[in-house]
Amino acid sequence: MTTRLIDEVLFDDGDPPRLAGARCSGCGTVVFPRQDSCPKCSDGAMSAHVLPVSGRVWSWTLQAFAPKPPYRPPSGGHRPYHVGYVDLGEVLVEALLAVPRAEIRIGLPVRLTTVPAYRDEDGTEVVTFAFRPDLDGER
Image 1 (cartoon, one colour):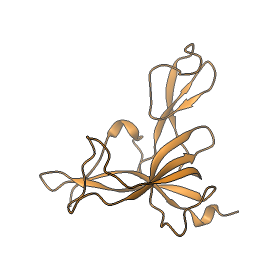
Image 2 (image 1 turned 45 degrees about the vertical axis):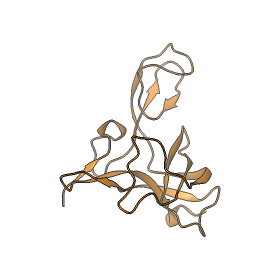
Image 3 (image 1 turned 90 degrees about the vertical axis):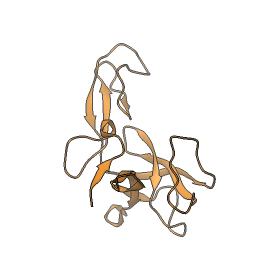
């Protein structure tokens, strides 16, 4: 089966893929996704910055209703899923949380993964980023 990333701009060129943000040369602010100017100081140049693969759930909720387009519901229709902010130290990233309801909590150690988002008309599986529980990250 053929797979592709949902948006190459969100990822670095590594294998496995990592999230690609940017860092301001003026004030050090880190952003995700990448952008051309700093939202904090507007003075520094933004350079590519690969984000850490592990962090902690900062906040979360259940996405119970189907989002607006370009969201594509899976075959069989929308199924609720967890979404939240993951604290990666330098930046909070909004992401899918591939975590069972019984395990999800603020402060939960999580690790970057990819999950199926939808299937193209030609059968290609399109994957997006998410975070799953990181048992090695328990302290």
